[in-house]
Image (cartoon, rainbow, N blue to C red; front, side, top):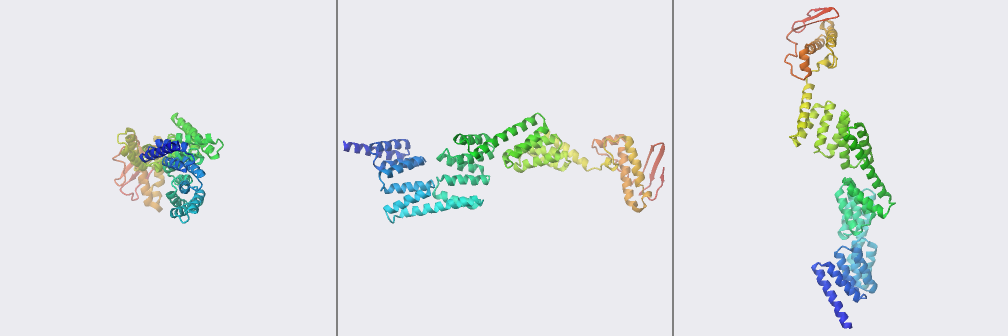
Length: 467
C-alpha cells in the first residue's frame, strides 16, 4: 500500500513536470496539488507548485508555498535560496538577506548564496537612495537609482510605484499609467497605486477612467484623504466645464467666460483639459469683442496644440478686433492650409486682407480730426479751420512743415468733400485722384455767409490768401 501511494505520488510529480514544461500551468498546478494531498510533509511538492505560481506571476501564492516548504523542513537549503530570490524580487530586502544568510549557514562559502546576498543588500541601499533623491526633488538621480533596483528586483512594487510618481512629475502620464498598472497587477488593492494611476489618467484627460480609479480606492478606504480630494476636484472640474459649455452654446457669453475662468482655477496645470477650456474662453471673448484677451487665450491653445484649426480661426477673428490686420491674414492663411475648402475661412481671409489694405492708405478722417460718421458740414468746418491753421503765410517759422500739412488737409478734403469720392473711399476702393499736391489746385467753399478761397501755384511761393 505504501509503495502504491508512493508510486501514485511520483506519477503526480511526473505529470506536473510534463505539464510545466509545456506551459500548461493549470494542469501542472492540479498535479502538484494532488501530490501535496498525498504527502504534505515533503517540501518538494510545495517547491514545485511555487515554481508554477512564479510563472503565473502569482507571487503571494508562490511565497506561501515556499513558507510551507520550509515549515515542514527548516533545513531545506533550496527553499531558502528560492524564497530569498522571490523576496528580493518583491524588494523585501531585509527578509531576503536573512534567507541568503541562512543559505550560507547551511552551506558555508556557497558562491551563489554569497552573490545573492550582496546583490540584495546593494539593491536595498539603492532603493533607499532613490527615495531620498525623490524627496529632495533630484528626479534624474532618483530615476537612475530606480533602474538599477529594477534590474535585480523587477517585481518591486515600491520601486515601480516610485517610478510612476517620477513619471507624473515629468508629465510622462502614459508611463505613469503603465508602472502603476504593474503594481496593481501584483496587488489590486494598493491605494497609492490607484491614486497615482488615477492622477495619470486625469492629466491624460481620460476623466471617466480616472474617476473609476478614485472610486475603487474609496471603496477600500472611504476616508483616504488624497483619493477624496482628487475625486471631488475632478467632479467639480467636470461640473464647471459643463456649465461653461452650456452657457457658450446658449450665447450667454459673459456667463461662459466666468465659468471657464472658474474651471481653469481648479487645476491650472491640467494642460490637455485646459486646451478645451481656453478654446471655449477664446470663442466667448471674441463674441464679446474682447479681442486682446481672446488673442491671449487662443495663443495659449496654439502653444499646447499648434495644429488647432479652431484656435487659428478664432485668433484670426480676435486679431481683427485689435486691428492686427497682418496677424489676422497670417492666421487665416495658416488655417486655410489645413482646410482649403472651408468657405468661412476664405471669407475671413478676404475681410482681413481688405482691412490690411485699408490700413495702409491715408486715413483722411484722421487728418481732419473726424470720425467716419462726420457730416458734410462737419467736414467743411474742419477743413476751414485746419487750412487756416496751417496756411504757410501764417507759419513763417516752420513754413516747409506747414506746407506739407496744408497739402495733406487739402487732399483729405478733396476726397471727403466730394460725396461720390467719399462713398468710394468708405467702401475701400482705390481712388485715382486722391492727391492734388504738386499740380496746383483751387479749392473754394462757402461757410457762414462768407466765401473762402485758397489759391496756390506750384510749391506755395508766397501765393495769395483771401477770405
